[in-house]
Length: 144
Image (tube, rainbow, N blue to C red):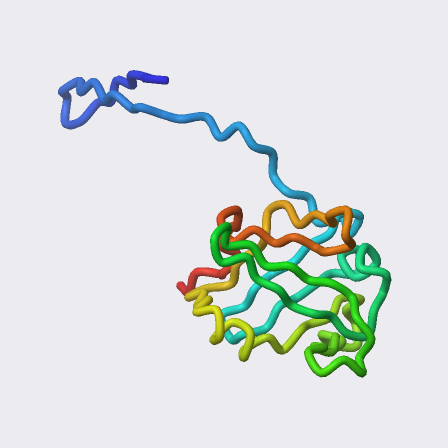
């Protein structure tokens, strides 16, 4: 949408044209009712309480990767499995947990340079939480 603005500068009128695009998506409200998953540049994956509930509140998860579609899969598994990644409480106040996923990320050459939030983490029919690397938003705070 092109909008024109007239601006006065030193007694002269200047017409400024702007080609604005309306942001049609809505802001994401962090209510805790929706699953939220973030991938940190340090190699950890954070799951909020709702995401953990969707997985069946496991103590550990298996991590999977679809190379062609660039999608991470997370599935609850018994901690005794050799491929199990334990869920670790983020901190005493948080209801979410982190996964130390550095080896997984290195193996699949996933190197985020900043913290990424998955826009639409969904549970598929096989009980796998699907995290699409093509549909992420940066959540890193800019340093001033």
